[in-house]
Image 1 (cartoon, helix red, strand yellow):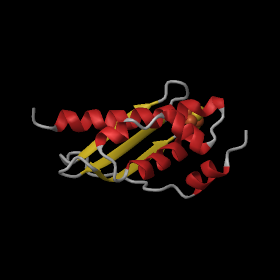
Image 2: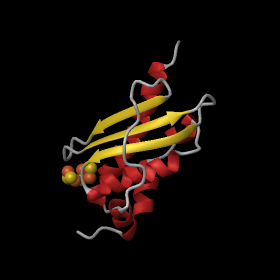
Image 3: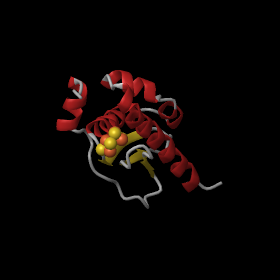
Length: 127
Ligand code: FES
Ligand code: FES
């Protein structure tokens, strides 16, 4: 199966690979796994006092589409509020990367990772 040029670009030059200190209260960590293939994606967001995502990093153990999806998402979330980031849909990721149907779950993994990170952030805030 051929990967699209955008997938290959993100796969060969992944943006924002790495991690932040997960105990930092301004850091949100979303860790998700794909039941379909066993791949794992960790997405971390660094959130400023205004609730805006100032930085993002990822580590993904998975296929090229999963790596490209997470790389793309780290670019998309920067400068967004949490609500804006939460509205990023896997369909937009799949469309941008021209993912074939068998690779749609890789983009769903990226959407789920954003949601998991936001949940983590909310759970860290004082009630
Ligand atoms: Fe697991 Fe993509 S199927 S690496
Ligand atoms: Fe499973 Fe890409 S995340 S094939």
